[in-house]
Length: 402
Image 1 (cartoon, rainbow, N blue to C red):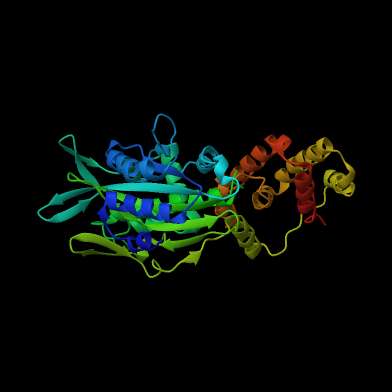
Image 2 (cartoon, rainbow, N blue to C red; image 1 turned 90 degrees about the horizontal axis):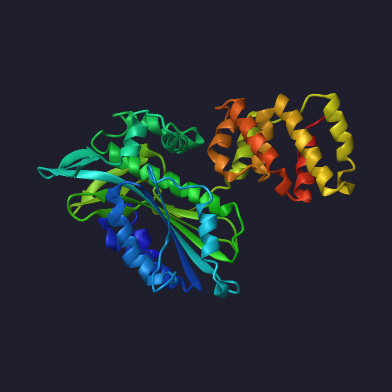
């Protein structure tokens, strides 16, 4: 990890970043290596894709067919991590030889920003495209301007995570200089999308033992060859659990930006210190309990009936147990949707893709409509829930019924 850690916040040629990832992967001596590459759809990211393909994928990935090698790729507006992508990719790379050993999964999350060089000064956020200066990254610019599209709403939700007013900070000239605003937006976006990826990794059991590293980076799109820098690095081992991170944080007010021999250098107070990543499902419960140390469901005749049934739940069939839980969800959703949605998320029944919504619910920053949406999704998928998990959830809900 040494070379990767040295490159955190330090601009260099894009090939140098990918060679460092290649050397790191070789040093792990895994039985197999897999990769996921997340980029923006913007055609300017072609260099980032080609560099990762040449220096990393062609060097360490298994052959797909006819001597060709390829990472699992997602490209969308803003370079958003798509929930579930790592689960599909991990399954693809779960080769037979990894069963008794382990595989390495490298997830590279690219954000990007355009750069114009005018009279020796760098201007961030625009680039010469087809002889015309245009915004880059256009999706991040649109989000900052308050535009509304599903993709932009997803980006904005990540920027509001933990109720940190990142967008307000980024829009304030007192917090972030307009000269570097577009650069800082790209850095924060890469960091937040990488967090989503590692949360997704932590939330499931891979098909074969897996060491995963998630590396957020920012590409500087220029008229010359693109440059790039590493924002940070997450790593986690499915055999041990937990996750660690080293690199820049997600608070734009804490970045220090300067140049070193003509190259950018971005730092904050903790960027060189490894720290443990959080368990976001349990964080939600702690946030809710901090605001509501004592919570009880109000008495209800139908709930009395469920309470009586739950006493014998261990003897009920799987089908009856699931139907009992579904009825319970309907009843509680009418009177206490927010705590129920939080409980379902903490228990792992609500998908981790609801992370941003549930954190806002726990902090009292969102209404009951989103909570009911989460409950409805869980209810629709109860046929896939094992009976013991259904019983455990019934017990957890009824524990709040006095």
